[in-house]
Each structure stands twice: as structure tokens, then as C-alpha cells.
Image (cartoon, rainbow, N blue to C red; front, side):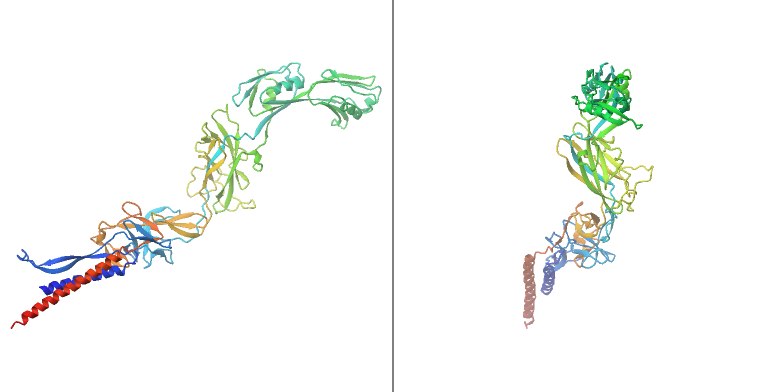
Length: 627
């Protein structure tokens, strides 16, 4: 009995030494999990009953149990090294056999697959060409091809327009010239776009052109001037030299003092008028259009002129000449209402609108703000888009509403039809965007852009959609034209300096693979030389209801068994699965100090069991010697 008991103890101590030695040997093995020996005692017993005086029959090894506790995480200089912080195993494809491991020392093979140092392929969730994770599990592969370009389909601009900016553009109506005789005695009212009350105007029936201009200058939104032009078509050099010449000129009834004693030609008469004391009058000899020289007299303030001339025999005059009125109406003047539908209302309605300081992208004085961004066509060529913002007068009475005109230019050419008609951005009393051309989303669809090269010629990229095609937003994928959306939905108009808070567009040029990154969720991101990144896949992790039921098969890997149950597979950092730490590995969880102590204990146990056998042998030898 004693021999069997000691022998079983030797076998158990030997196993304990083996397990402890294996732990010590793998103290530096990445992802290794230490083991411990579990023992059980032995007793003799029958089929139906145990002995009445049971004596132990030794010891046996019941199990060698692994400890799956977390090991320390240490950093490495390999971007594809991964450590699991928490529960879970990497899933490895070993030529069709699925293995599980905590060792995350990974690299890339010649085909671009992510593998461990035994060329087992790491499994995870694959991604499509746009970097969207598909949820389909397979071998992770790194695509080393160039990243294809992506055309811009959306440009989001988040900025603040300074509400303190002045209105730069001035739109006026040029009314006239109006003969004062046609508006004398007229009564009419003027209406305004800014909510100002109507203004009543009456022109004196006997007013000169100057007096009528003075009256109109007192009307808000009007600026008037007057001139009087008298052309003496019957007067020539022959008439002046035909006898005793005399010439009289009255300005608003007052005679102009002239010295005509030495006048012998029209030019002499013009010089005499120009040398008079009246600075508002001038004279010149002009061609009447038929080759005949005539005298033209102009009073630049619009006073009434009366003239008479004679050669002693023939007298011409007196002839009265009334002046003309020129009126400029500001953009705040909406209309003129004359109950009798007189000359002034007719002239106002037919007068052209003239724009002063009109928007010009080459003249910074014609716009309040501008900002530029880079966009891309279907070939990945970059283009510069500039957005111009011009403050406009507030509509209505100007209370609670503000408006800005928006112009768009790409590579120096106006787009979205803003070369003729700009978009109108309207803001409420709080400075928030209400709409752009009535669209509350604040979107501008650019559907007329033809991408061109530096010589101004089409560069072969996709152009505008076919005529009659309606462009919907957001632009559907994949895009088939150069149409894109400028989103101004986040624009504000506060009393603060102009500033671009954010400006994002979704296009990019082609790029080469420059590096790899791994997120805490195990997503593999490829970094490209164009500044873009794209998800290439996501590492999958597996957990088991009974981790201790896994069977170790070497290479720091385990396989599923009936006792472990089926794997629960998911993405890192979901459910009970741990997260991923990139550029790191999980060290062995073996406590080397404890293992060295266990080694001493196992040695002592072995020696003690050997002593049991030695003692039993001595006792047996004593019995044999009795004779």
C-alpha cells in the first residue's frame, strides 16, 4: 500500500513540476495563460459500499486548469499589434480550422491579409468600397490600391454675416429729361419700399425748371437738377454782318449785360456771352446736324431764357425757352401715383433702372464678404469655389427681416445662374436663416457647372445633368453629374465680425496608402496621402460561456470543444467583449515569483514522496530479515 501511495505522490509531484516549468518557460510568451494542477485523493471502495476503516491510496491529478486572467498590456512600435482589454479571443483561420488566441502580434502577408506570426489569418467584419462595414465575417485584408477620387456632392458652409455691414449696391431710376412745361401744376404722391408714408408733391404751375428741381429735391428719395438749352438755328454770320446787329438775352426776366458793338461772327457772340458776369450760363458754336453752324446757349441751373436779335431790318423774337428737369430716384422709391396719370408718373414708369456700384467679383468694394473652398470633380481635379455675400436693403419696412444676395463662382466663372440673378438669403429678427430663395433648408443646387482645366477647356470630368433633369437633394449615390449642393443652413447674421465657423465638403482627390490605424472598436482605418481615411474592416472577437472548456493546441491558441460551448462572436467593446488597444500586446499572465515558489514546493513534495517509498522499503526489509 505504502509503495503505491508514494508512487502516486511521485507521479503527482512530477506533473506539478512539469506544469510549473511550462509556466516559467512561457513567462514571456505574448498572450500565454498560466496553468495550475488540481489534485484529488484516492480511497478504496467497493461497488455497493466503502471500507469500514478507509485508508487513503494516494493522490491523482484531476485536472490541469488554465487561468484566463488579464495579463499586463505593453506598447509596441507595430501599428497592427493589438491587445484585448477584457473578455474575448481573436478569431484565426488556420487553413480552414478556426482557432482562438489572445496573442495579438499581427502583420500583413504578401496578399495583404492580416496574419499572426504562424500565418493564421485574422478574421473580422469586411467593409465595402466606400468603407461601410458589411457585418459579414471573413479574413481581413488590406487593400493597397490607390484610393479612387470622390466628386463633391455637398458643401456645407457655417458662417456669420456681420449685420452691421452697409448696403453697398445702389439702384436708381433716371427720370428725364422732363420739359418743365409738361409737369407744371402736376400733383402726385410717392410710395416707398421701406414702409415710409406716402409723400405728396405739387409742382407750381408757373415754376421754372430750377424751381421744379428745387421742389423735387425736397422729396425723400429724389435728387433733381435742371438745365435750359436754347439753340438759335436762324442766327448765322451773314445775319450778324448784314446790318446793325443787336442781341438781347434775359434770364428769368432779367437782362444779361452784353457788349455786342464789336461782334462780327457767331463765335464773337459766344465769347461775349461766356465773358459775361453770369457764371451759370455758357455758349458755344455747334453743328446743327446739317453742316450749318448755330449758336447754343445753356443755363446749367434751369432758369427760363428769353432772347431777341435783329440786324436793324429783321427782328427775331422775343423767344422764350423753358428748361428741362432731370430726376434720379433711389431704390427706396417704389412707385409714383398721379390721379390724372400725368407726365411725371408716365416718365417714372418708363424710366430705366441704373445700378451703381454693381456687384463685380473683381472689385472688393462691391461685396461685403467672401469665402473660398476647394471642391473636386469626378476625376479628382481640384477647383476653387468662392461664395460672395452682398447685403441688400431690408424688405418692407425693414423691421424683423434682413436680406443678403449670394453669388457663386468656380475657377473665376459664375455658376448656379448667379451671373444674372443672385440667390437671396433671408434672416429673421434673431439673426437666424429663414430661407434661401424660399427654401427653409438653405440649400443652393449648382447644376450648371462644367469642370474645366487651367486653359478654360472642359477637362473630361462629368458635366451638368441633361437638360430637363431635376436634381434632387441630397445627391443620390453614385452621382452621375457635376451637380452639387451648397448648404447654408447653419448661416447666421449677428452683430459680430464676419467669420467662417466651419466649411466641409465630401469630395477628395486620389491618394496612396500611407498608414494604418486601429480604433478601440477594432476598426482598421487606412490613411491616404490625400488626407482621407477609410475603414477596411473590423476585428471580430469571440467569447465562450465556459472559457476553461477550451482546448489548448499550441502556438498560444485554443480550439472549441463540447465543454466550452459555441463561440459568441461580436465586435469589440460590445456586449461582454473587451476593447482593443492598438500598438500593444497582452503579456503572459504568469507570476514568475509565485511560480518559482511553486517550483520549490513541488520539489519538496517529490522528495517527501520518495522518502515514503524509502521508509516502506526499510520496513519490508526488516520483516524479511526475521528468521
